Image (cartoon, rainbow, N blue to C red):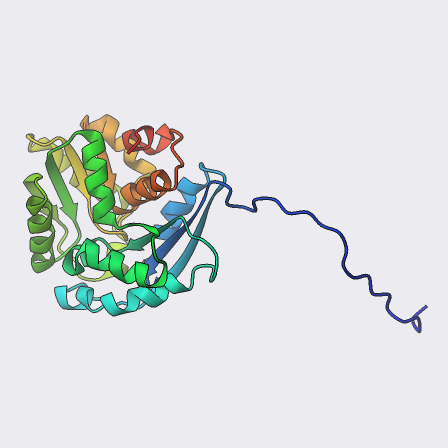
Length: 259
């Protein structure tokens, strides 16, 4: 038996289906230093079968400054280019909140579309604005981990788009590695502190390294306000842009809303 030649059977018949992404292919550009966003998106996408998530990583400096954020712009195109070469992508998301504001959303979209013309795009701040509108919220409490000069970019950018920021809180931490280790209890306490100030319609937690998505619904029940974050809002926005509009209330108010 051992001396028998291998029998080769070729051109076996097969059929095809829509694969794992009948509801949409979504690409996520992740910061090299990000510990959190893929974990939170996997949790959310598990509740949206048929929407497939693909990700690539973009080099960034671990220290978050206006200069290191802007330095990512020329690297975006190549990261968008590696998603399923030759295949159609439905949405591509760029996963850095502060860089999206330091660079500008439209410039981010231009770099993505250099590689993938016509693709629907989002960023954390683009998604946050869509979330504020879905909440019908105009007065936003903002919580970030950033240092003061980055916080200034965030506050000015949100204000320039017609929203008010009556209260702004920060942990004032520069390192992504440290930010990713800020406990969910600390995030919850920060949101509650902003909500106690009153005069706001919603709370936005900025930064893709921050862990909030799993606790959003519980925090909303505590503070009586809609709550979202960079990862939370962008996952919702990417799914909605892809046409995935089923309600997932376990992730909070936002995931019961359409665009």
